[in-house]
Length: 100
Image (tube, rainbow, N blue to C red; front, side, top):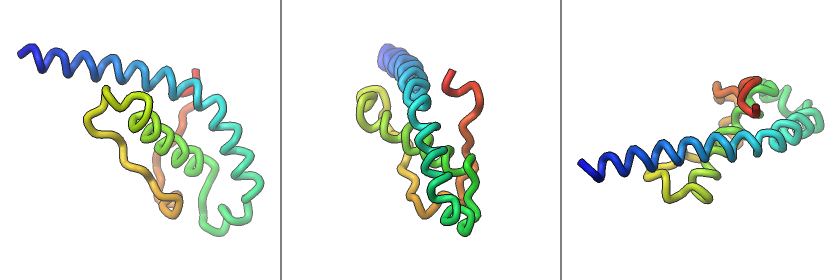
């Protein structure tokens, strides 16, 4: 019973830290992603990739990076990496209040 409580507490702390780190990182990631999308607009347009899909892909990989590095002790299984070739399939979106 105590192990279960400890595991739950680790997940709560890990989730809170993930939100905090991700929130700060999105302040850098979103402008960089926008610049990348504008510079390579023709490439993304040909692949039918919108700005939201690119930012969503970047966010998914940011979450995987945070879980696999800084917060590794808090996550028994981390998010999988999403390959760049799969950007057109991404449905995840960065919401307006995410970086807040």
